[in-house]
Picture 1: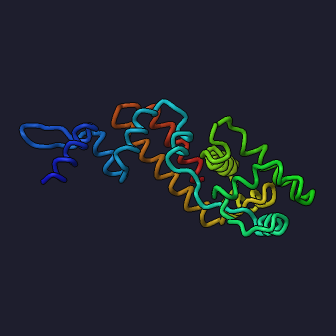
Picture 2: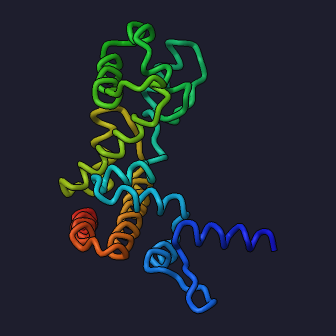
Picture 3: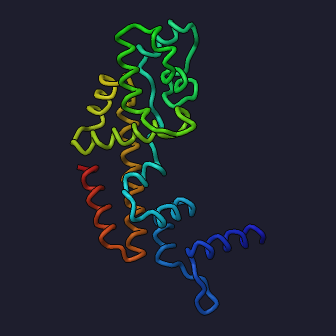
Length: 213
């Protein structure tokens, strides 16, 4: 009973349902959230940020997760620093190593250049938590979306990231992430419609088509 009351309070507080003639009825917003299988907090974040850049809102909710340093770069770093490091790109230990200028001078010139490229492209924020903030993850997400808007497919995007930055993202992971991006944009479109923001809904539809094509 307590669980039901808690859930009901969430549904009514977030205006996902309303009472009509002593019955509960889903609001337009509630139906949009339900059909999209969104957590109510994610839905509320979208609702409050409908006027912002939709891709930035989406990246905050659904950044790319699966990314790695190339095996050749991680092997070189492990050998030079005499450590066993994680190849996961967003692991704290990896972020610490590739952002540390004291480590940089120890690497071979070719690898120094790759790491400098990484730092210049993805470590541009001024966060106090840098490099342990989420900005690197967001920047990589933007980069993948930029390549996709240039009509590169997941295989081409994977090859480009490896060539330019020694970042390894599997094509299958890129495809899955882009699919989740489309689903999130579709959810945003439904919420925009629920609040009669047809212009924003059209903007989301255009973005979906660009990513799909």
